[in-house]
Image (tube, rainbow, N blue to C red; front, side, top):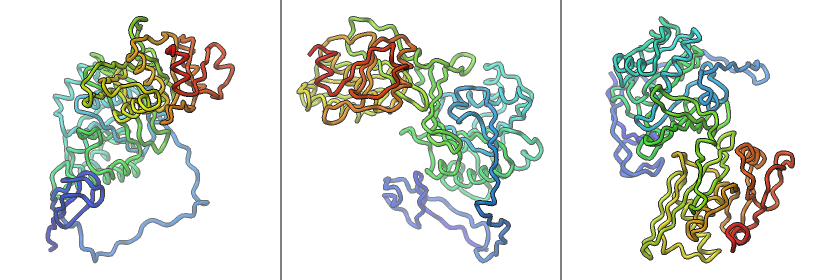
Length: 453
């Protein structure tokens, strides 16, 4: 009889070592190796009979992909148009952000179509799920609840119930009897995800898997989990704001970096069909440090207000704080303003905030960030009817941005009259005619024309 062996496995990348190491050789992270006991499944000398037959690429028939809606339009947008049978969707987010609420509402919409849904919860009891369902006014006989953490028994339940959708909440709470390690360990996560993948592909059912995130905002467990599933979606937002953002970071059946906007209410999550109007507010024409940008997230533009506050600080100990963008990006824009324009921001504290709790990665908002900082620094309000577009280079030049026509159409739809765009940008005249476009070559030209020198 084979003996159990002990391995040290990295909790971040899954690297295995026979002995403990302070730093993982795979990903370079410190103090990430934990000891786990591995139980051998079978003898290595056992012969395995091949059951699959190699097929030439030209002999494979092209299958038509059939999708069906989740019942929530913003969720379908992030999924690439709907749910694909045989797919596995990994949904990650902070605790209490609303992951279970979202999936319970999806289960209700699917159940109304006459399809069966199996909801496996390893974190909450049947009574707790019933309380949430009552709060959401969900009373659907096609939703079946299961409180069994053993993933090896899931095949039996699937054969008895034959559901169209399976929800596992969460992957960190289920386990397999083939391993002696505790639920949530690296070995269990990989083993359970592999079993779920096998069941999904063989039964052509849709699996939604909930995953916890670390304090850094990444999905807990090794990165191999994200490679094993078909779709990875992050559920983002701040608890103090009602808005929640669905952001797709991987999708084998559609575009990545797609976003969907939802709003948390007393009756659950509801769709926000006009995101741009949500992030804009009536601005005071006498207040400085506020600029509107047209960010492109996923496949649609969003008009969002950016607010900056420049206050006197201690020389040499100036603070830089950013909410909604990467703080290193804020420091880079401040460095360009100091070097190319000679603005003394090293003696000032700079605070920047994106309204609505949304995190922006689009480089086209650089010009809007610089405009908001300059406006606050000079105590000079910006024009209320202008939107700012452009990527700021280290030389101070304003570079072109992609999807300019779509951004300008969104600006026009919301009633803005002016737009500052990179000089020489090519755009469709029909879509730009109602707008007055100001071509900006560099920071000097922008400050002279907009800020008045």
